[in-house]
Image (cartoon, rainbow, N blue to C red; front, top):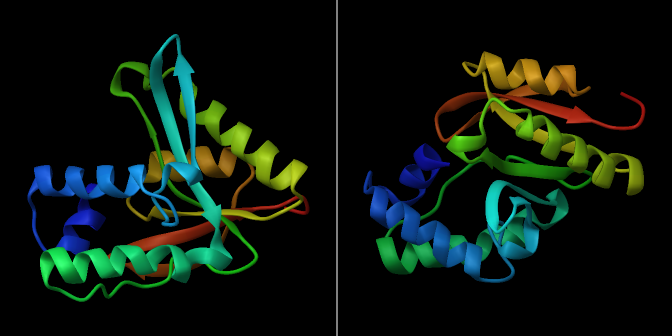
Length: 166
């Protein structure tokens, strides 16, 4: 998310990027809202999180972000659509550094597949950086298939999806 947020706000200031994400995670009705987050906990500690939303809501969810960027950073948000109607979209997923390499990423992805593909009979999609071979390998192992390639904020991405028929 770091590089994408820097593109959004037009600055490489880590503190501003973190404040941006915290603001929207605590708010409602946007793509980064807590309303669209799943978390995995160990005791009282969040060890992994995934942000997933209905792709049909992308433009409505993105509008508060565009408004905030216009007001706070005096710039227009120009970004490609990373999802569309008919897809539950994994916008971001992360595992705490202390818990990486222990299968937690696979666990949360399996949960998301069960929730959105098996239970809701939907299509689950995500973008993966073409250079991130390790992540792509995990997604393919779990049943995702490449459906196309696209650019997102100047990065070459592969669009992967999984559905009951894939």
